[in-house]
Image 1 (tube, rainbow, N blue to C red):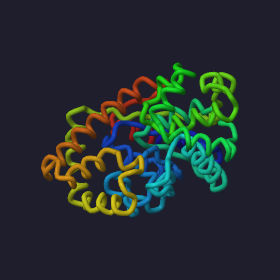
Image 2 (image 1 turned 180 degrees about the vertical axis):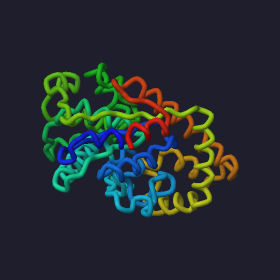
Image 3 (image 1 turned 90 degrees about the vertical axis):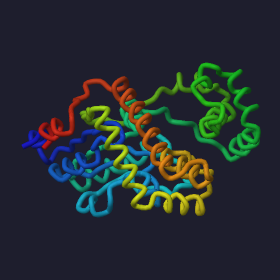
Length: 305
């Protein structure tokens, strides 16, 4: 019997499984959820979208049979997904688990959302229509607005890219609505932790060479399953404008469609960029979380199952 059987089943428990992309998180989370009578909440910035199925490597409907998966097929590709949306989703899933007497497994590679879940975010002020209209006029000249905000609040704006309209818009909203620079606002209204129940974190360790091999195999499988057709459909339906259309696997396929790469180079580019992402994910996970239980998939299975 695994670790969770030590807990009373009438007491809500949750855990998180993190690790680099293609490390085996999904399969492990499904096994744990099946064993522990749990729902699953996905921590994935692509699986959240409807119609993005192959490139996101989300589990199939067959794999999800019998387990409620949240954070998948939640938004359309032209809708924005951010940490505020994720925290709202977590609250919804938490309430569902309480009502249905289920535990919760949180799993995915976008660990930034897990970090924000634990640390919390500051509640933003209510924004009037007048402020929204004024902000939109400012955003018509993004470089100028970024420079203006940087002069007002270099401490905050140095953390933001000059071509990030979403975060620049948020800074504008705060300043134009209440007259405080973002640094001062967040000092006065510090973040409040979202998670109140214990949340143990399990991190998958995997050999780098083995991970690269898994990434290459997964990339080949995506191409065989119709990755190119999926991206053609997404571009036709949503254009290239949505933020998710800049994601790994999508941007390289769009370049292939533009004639930049041949099919062999397309697979190589996706694999290389995914491996780089995996390295960044591992670095983030190793530096941002404390008291993490680490191990290869087999080791974590023995602990959890």
